[in-house]
Length: 154
Image 1 (cartoon, rainbow, N blue to C red):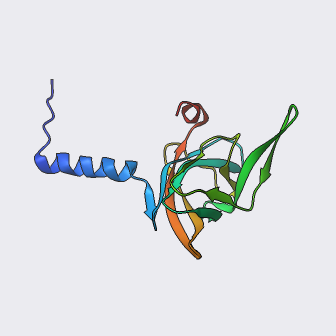
Image 2: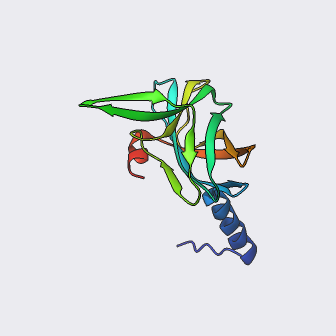
């Protein structure tokens, strides 16, 4: 049996790496957490999900990614027994409220026209553009890429 012993420096390194991977993105009192993308083989688009919280009223007004031609903000509309996805111009981020953008049936982002298929277990960069107190802030996020089955097990 081989016993692995990590020195204090190695333990510190692995702890630091774990914290970096689990940390959210922050800017101007805005916090983005739990960002992930669903990788579906054979599709030229992918959905991105996350939580966003702001200490003051703010609005998500746009997003971009070098991984796709466009990033659309979307929501699901229910009319009778029909559901339809459509694009929205913005998403309100009320002060002190954690906005849940983790469901295909609610607000989410769509990477439209992927430049290449997403590789499972990697990350995809997404830049959010948020307007708050009369100024625009850009927040860079790394969304974890998950295969369809793992994505559903959140």
